[in-house]
Length: 376
Image (cartoon, rainbow, N blue to C red; front, top):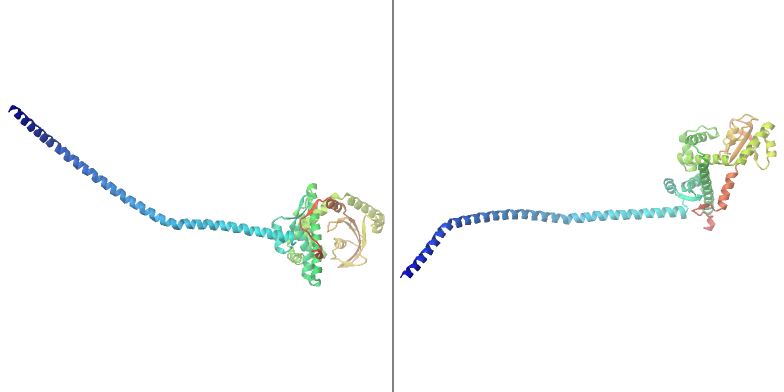
């Protein structure tokens, strides 16, 4: 019985302890539950907020993705347009270069467009002693010779004869351009210079050739009509002529010595040109007009110089307008528009001799081939 009571007491005691524990833990459990629920609600709200932001981001990405479908093809198209434009430009440029090369170096064309192109780009037509001959100089000399013939006399020739005449003028123009290039080379070596003032003075002198006082505008029209050249191109020709004349005077010691002999003989003989011609026969060229000639005569400047003199008076030494020698002129008689005179020319020979030597030695290389029409 005692044992039974003990067990009964023990059961009651456990029940009482559980009750006490429940009473003590219940408030804590309730508070924990409340906290748990509160935290979960916060997490749900946070998750709900994050989801909304994600939805916005996703929507934004969708819009951008749709835009990229139009953006990237457009960028690719522009890129392709740039590439195609560059390729087309290169092809066109190559065609122009090849076409220009064929026209200049194979077909020997001389039209105005090619002339202007060669003025911009210093293309060589030949070399003289390693010095480039400008294609524009060659075309300039050719045009100055052929323009008036093509405009005024072209109808007088049949096609074959006219082509042959063109080739002759091309050969002459090429030779002139080569000689003037050689003169420029020598001028550099000899420190010879021609100033713009000298060129302008020569141009102004040409305005009054033949005793006619022309305006610059009128003279420019004349050279454009007769020579197919602008003022600047005509001045280029004058510049080259002056350079060559200075070079020839400098290098031709023999011509200078002969000119001094002429001066001495004329001084001793009272301007007897016959006497000088006899004593220097073969070294000088003696000429008579044989009567009155036009004072506008194109003769290297002799008629113009003679018009400045009085009968019996001698001019003394002066350089030919062509730059190919010294002249002496003696006036016989004159009128207001005509003149009669005798002259002595001391030709320059050293320059031509040196140039011929260069050709013999193979130091002149030409990049175009000009042959008679019947051989084409």
